[in-house]
Amino acid sequence: MAVNADLRELYQEVILDHNRRPRNFRKLDPADRTAEGFNPLCGDRLTLYLKLEGDLIRDASFEGSGCAISKASASMMTDSIKGKTLAQADELFERFHHMVTSTADDEIETETLGKLGVFSGVREFPVRVKCASLAWHTLRAAMLAKDEPVTTEDPAL
Ligand code: ZN
Image (tube, rainbow, N blue to C red; front, side, top):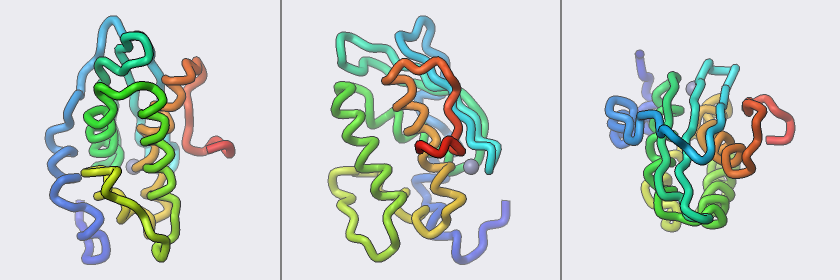
């Protein structure tokens, strides 16, 4: 894929690395929670698996196919939610969502997001926001134990 100068910063090395070698890219069987996500704008699809112990996320993994941003996002998300409670993961969702949907002038606190801060660049590429947030919307569906597949075209998202 050709990456032009504007997109170069977006596709930071860490994103390219997670795309090449996605972490937690496997099925969890059995999983306590499973959810499917689809981003029709880009064709990104993923299935998310969670293993819970009480309200603690013991393990998280995903399978699917999509662009570099969606894959890297799912890879880094599953890494960052392991060992967190559902409430903490939901808080992280809120912070991530705020970061990628804020305007370029908005101050964003990337310290609390750690490595996930690399996705702040998608703010300037509205189509890419869906790619970056697909895994997170799927996570929320898994946490709410929704049976319906989620799509980034849902007006509620
Ligand atoms: Zn995508």
